[in-house]
Image (cartoon, rainbow, N blue to C red; front, side, top):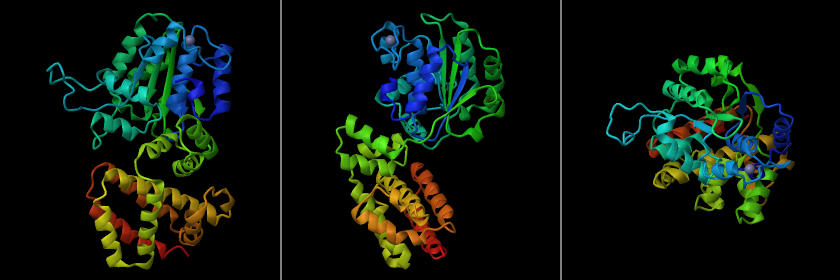
Length: 383
Ligand SMILES: [Zn+2]
């Protein structure tokens, strides 16, 4: 990952680069931003830039020994930590007592990042095969961090520790890390990455300099997709609209086989049935769609969230921001009056809950029936 591969975030890149060149690198920085905004990508580009032996004014060189090791994510002075959990087959060497920790999953982690550093937390759980479990950063990880930092830097002025999802740090593990954050060995740099500020321990929060990372404007996602993913401008625009500033989501939509138009038609039919309170139609729809599989179900629910957000914008007369045409635009214009400040929060929460449960293999028929009746009720409370 280079700065040039990070989608948008131009002013942030400039600031990070300037800090390096003015030798003002703070020893603990917290990259905080919503899902898909590019926190991890920025941290990777930043770490590469710091370690590069021959950096230019805008990016790392890509050719020096440090960059070459970085290409394979095998740099001896970059250490990654991330949430893990007990996983079947983890104890490859037969020691069933082994405790989970980042170093045991470094292979999967590298594989994921070499494909893309725009990842959802759920992508990582899926890769570990533990969609239904919680993953955490363990005390064992903190012991390893201390060990890593005790080593002499191999070949660079800095040892960089990148901790992904610091909000998942186990409470009991925190004291060990705090002490190191407070008095780090010289030449140590911590890059902490998080999506949920409120879930980070206050003591950690107060020890790190915050770098806030905003969502990516649609236009920049659209341009990036068109330039780098052989995607037509029209498709790129549609995907950017669906992604809502989240590039990990944009990539997910791009890779999914089904046409975005399909989401629209399925969603529109469903909403019409709920709106009319057509019970037998709703049940028929649920029956058919519950056989569609988890990914299409998730995609349609995500799509629904985008439409509800657009309806709210439309209601607040921000309709000119609606960068869509044709049937979708007509639908949103007609549908918007039924999604108001009185019911939008509840609708959005119901959709988010449903996505959460679909990811965890809930029974789709029960879930979608429940959601349909809820929507039928909520649409009547808009005014
Ligand atoms: Zn280099």
